[in-house]
Amino acid sequence: GALFESWVVAELLKARFAHGMASNLFFWRDRTGHEVDLLIEQGAALTPVEIKSGRTVASDFFKGIDDWRRISGQAETAAWLVYGGEREQSRARVHVLPWRRIGELAARLA
Image (cartoon, rainbow, N blue to C red; front, side):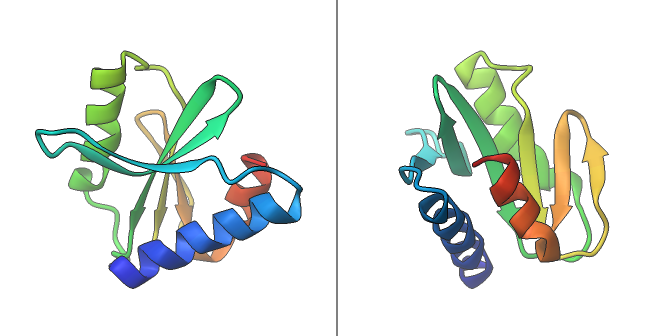
């Protein structure tokens, strides 16, 4: 899990640098343990990204995004989930992207 997460973050960081952009990638965790693997700053907006190595999407994969939306007051914010599976999906305002298509996420958020 940690290796997969590090790889996704490195790929997104690499893409941002290749486009001449600042890193602007952050990890978020509050004092009660709520966390999001990655927040990508785009101007004044923050885009949450969860990273899960599992090959099957599970409902608990969205907990960090749901918590962040509730706490930040940004319930309508677009969000992403990168996972170890093969199918692209959309669920509850979260775009689910298979790991093989990480380049698309990098391009969309660049």
